[in-house]
Length: 148
Length: 190
Image 1 (cartoon, rainbow over the protein chains, first blue to last red):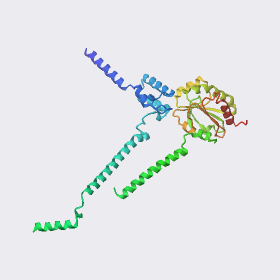
Image 2 (cartoon, one colour):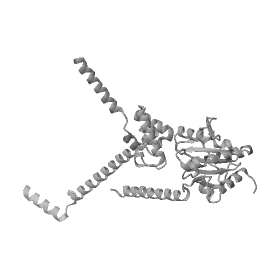
Image 3 (cartoon, rainbow over the protein chains, first blue to last red):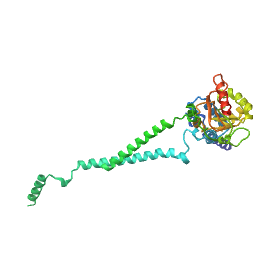
Image 4 (cartoon, one colour):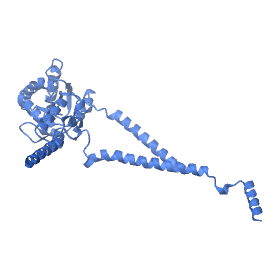
């Protein structure tokens, strides 16, 4: 009985992992670009998009992984067939440049905000040395009277 | 912000705007995107754009377009999923057989297509002329190809002659223009 239960659990685990690793047609169609119309396959009804969809279906049925299917399509149609550029080599720039631009933007806005806030504080706090001469004289007189 | 920082910021902003305007002007003036076909349409005879692509025919290996210099060439852009390409394939094969002895080469450029589909197409229509594969369509922009099929004529000097044929060559609209293109490529006098 225990042996039977263990076998059933193992079979379930295997089925689960196979299902998790199996590529989904709709996902791949959203990640691959039609070479003639430049939209993703799920948005295209062109003849080549139809052929690519059937190719993906065939390869999934043959047991290929998503990465393998994408590699085959890149081999046929070039890297532009991928909706997202690969995260390696020169294409990595497509991912890093926007992040770099965002970081530079944050630094610039931060620096500007810091400069403006400092200017406002210094404008709000007049320099103690810039007292009106009459007022300064009155303060001196009051202080002298107080000390006396 | 100091006056100096402000000036630097203004200079950077103005430079960026001027740079973008220059790019726009350059694109409008030179980047028409019509490739060699655009020059041909203006009455010029541009040099046929060069390429090196892998062959799908029995010869195998790569084919460099410049290796055909000295020969008249009919360059036909096609794909196996294109219906008019099927209609014109027998006429292209016939041209190759008829003028091969005069040095004419029919060169098929199978673009944006699966290689195995293209090979099936070639077998089905009995194509024996050289065919190269351009899966990514890298040659299309340089030649100015806007759809399939399209046919160009290149003379022995490697220059485009005649008219670019858009659509099947074996149609009422294109038959005469195709014959004229072949004649010009061969360099025959009318």
